[in-house]
Length: 76
Image 1 (cartoon, rainbow, N blue to C red):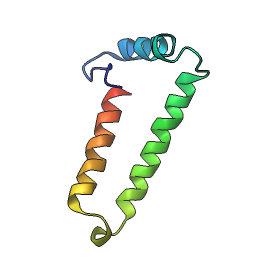
Image 2 (tube, rainbow, N blue to C red):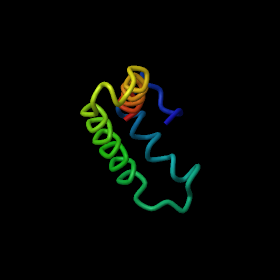
Image 3 (cartoon, rainbow, N blue to C red):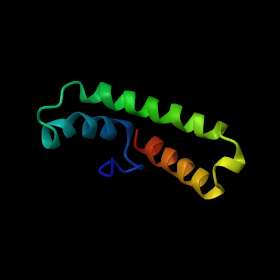
């Protein structure tokens, strides 16, 4: 995901996503679909974390979750 620049156009992001398995994971099957599942799973985890009581999760940890979700969304 570090290879995707948030400023990349949707077409460039799609091209990088398409080329990634051949360059780094030659035996991967259904990489694009699995990546989409990962994004959906992470978003669901993030939604669950937002429901955790404030006294059970520090402000710092909440910030880390927010930051990581923004990182992923910019590279989707």
